[in-house]
Image (tube, rainbow, N blue to C red):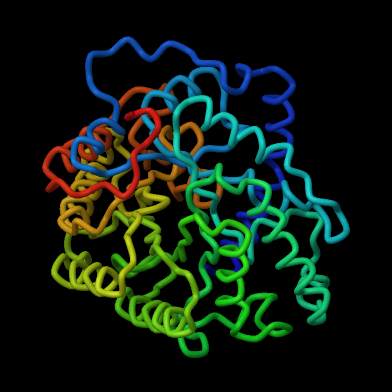
Length: 395
């Protein structure tokens, strides 16, 4: 992603620490405490998905778990994707800090206590999420020995700690680019000291620490021209080039995560369903299972009027999922949050007109919006597939 995005994301992550302190001090319910579900007769989203062999879940962070959101999250999600609690601003606040698993332990226990699968994300290897304790000067001046110790040491200890408890790991996140070398980004701290081989080595090391874990690569920008101006065809070709190289090297890559960050502006015109389905088939032909990850809708280009905007956002979800779910190799769908109360888009990309972002299935008061019914409808219309996993709550 762009440097502008990286800076704002790091600022957001650092600021979240203060909120987290309040939640962990007792503002929210005890982790793992099972609250009664909402009084409603409709099925939760995870059950609609599971009826078609799809595992549905959402991202969440410990600092977001106020009582209302906790109830909603427990009801709707069969899989947990950690937003912040596995990032280095939590695990390793400074280059010399020992690893701190306080928050990652809590988010894993929360999922286990509520019958949810866990994917370790957003990525064991990523060039964001460091927090204020890491300076750019340090990150970009590490020698090979230091880089290997910090990057691979953190990766190995993290996977080892959760061996057998976390079903899958995003090993590498956002490491490809059309402007890179042979599809691989060179503008990351690891590339200079370690060379391109650091990506394959990361997968081998994760596999050594947990041979039964499902390992993914996670990337973005495949649907339409995105807010950075990236062309989807270029990103598809670059990413497939990297995947082919990893598989040729024998790297244990099992799944492909497609970040479904959808840009609403002229989505119907810009999203080419036939080309997208061809891309999904290209992934499947390489033996990889497909995960839709981090799905939300950036509502730039839409009117401020909530009723109109909600209808148009819902249309984006339905068009996208109706296409993506035609592929039976899509096994998992993960929203990047459930409620507009905690969307990163409001923090990182506020609308120019000041209207609050409304990118998710539920509004700030945890009420289902048109987006919810669009996602539900897409699951209802999807063809059945053989599931990759069975969520504990479905047994």
